[in-house]
Length: 221
Image (cartoon, rainbow, N blue to C red; front, side, top):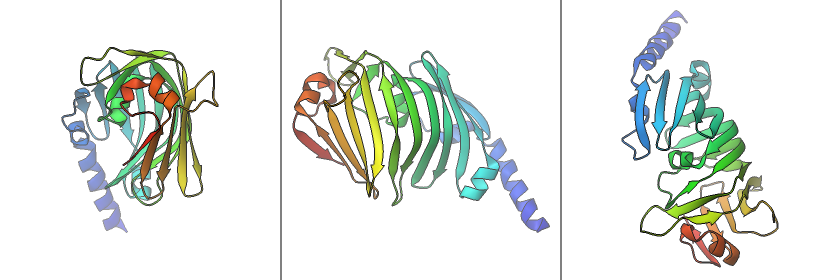
């Protein structure tokens, strides 16, 4: 028993002193990183800062890297928990406001960027493995979005309502105008095994042209 405690203490000590830069590669959205894996922070293009504290006990019991995190900045005050394993990430208990520039942290390959504020309630997001799902709700303020490539002008975007609900063996996602929540702009399904299909309606293509998906078409990833 004492040997096990000693080994665990040694491993915790090693993790505590590792530089925070090990967690983040040289990403386009990263403006700087400091601290250690135990407690560190990374800057996000747009002005927000993401800080985290490693949760050693939760890491041991979950067999992964667990941390509590908090993002702050202009229009951003968002916090939650994260658990990372090889090929899997779980984010839960997320709540607060976020500037849309944080989308590039979560999805760096998005073909567009937006200027708007989001109110986020995300009880659970699990990606990787055979039980992937998303449960949550996002409400945005009016803003604008534009493609990340090309010279297209920014398109105005009305307040949006985004919901994700696990139903059976899939998660169903809907994007609608906040003022007309029966008018679907985008629908998507995430299968538990990771299959992801996005469908753009004709109304969605007209209102969200920066997404680059023709109205009435579906894309499967």
